[in-house]
Amino acid sequence: MSTTPQPVEHLVLTGVAGCGKTTAAENLHEALGWPAAEADDFHPQANIDKMTAGTPLTDEDRWPWLESLRDWMSSQAAAGTKTIVTCSALKRSYRELLSGATGRVLFIHLVAPREELADRMQQRGGHFMPTTLLPSQLATLESLDPDEDGATVVSQPTPEQTLDAILAALETASPPR
Image 1 (tube, rainbow, N blue to C red):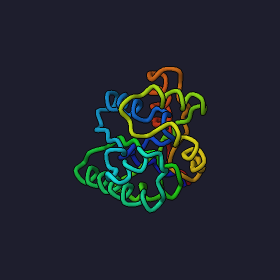
Image 2 (cartoon, one colour; image 1 turned 90 degrees about the vertical axis):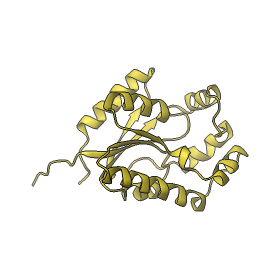
Image 3 (tube, rainbow, N blue to C red; image 1 turned 180 degrees about the vertical axis):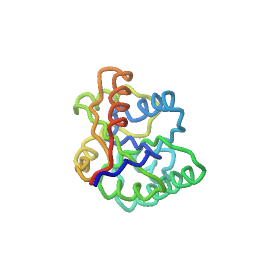
């Protein structure tokens, strides 16, 4: 029996630092008109201080942060608003927590070569995440499993090409069985 895929209420851009989540979210906001939220803005100051000092976060650091993001997504869905969210969501367990938001949550996992990630991180200014934490993020990363609601998209040479790849993934996305 075939079921019609439910519409996406939340589009969550995931991946390690430097993969292009923020730029993609800005471009998706322009293309779709959905509000975009940067998960980094939901971090408590203690988490920001740890990362600024080059100390990786623990799961215990992340749970309240992820819960606040999930709750924001649910409040937006309750108001009838679809959202775009950037969140590293490196582990499946983090994505499972975010999937608990009201409405369908679709994950787009952005990937890029390690050297490109490091270059992008070094070129961006005003961000608290140092390049020295990239290896710990890559070590923690659990790629999307086939039974997760989402798609993996390779960051393209230009932001416009990456946007096109994400929109194509969004258009063909159907929930896992």
